[in-house]
Length: 106
Image (tube, rainbow, N blue to C red; front, side):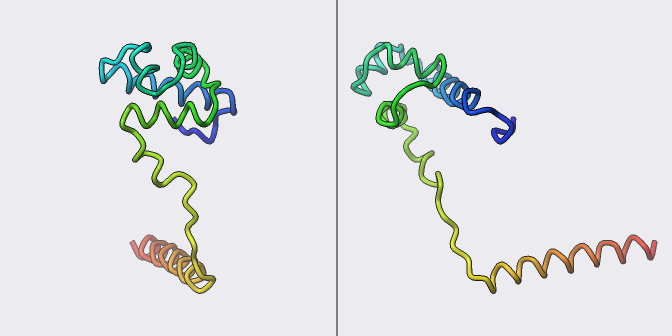
């Protein structure tokens, strides 16, 4: 599934569903997860049903499920110099030209 094709509401439901699967795989009841995360059982139900919770609740649940490392690369900015971007662009152009040349010779 490509999350880029999901609406905002669908993405919230997808995240909630994924967290529910992690909870179930760890055999943790909703009430226990709520206690571990310091949130209400209703917040866990909302998260798993439609993803409608605060960022604080989301992070508390992610931490309680041992998934905090999954957020490590979330929104990390890749800084590149213009020279690096041009080099990557030039390498891509050369690769395509070489591939066509080989195809024409066959």
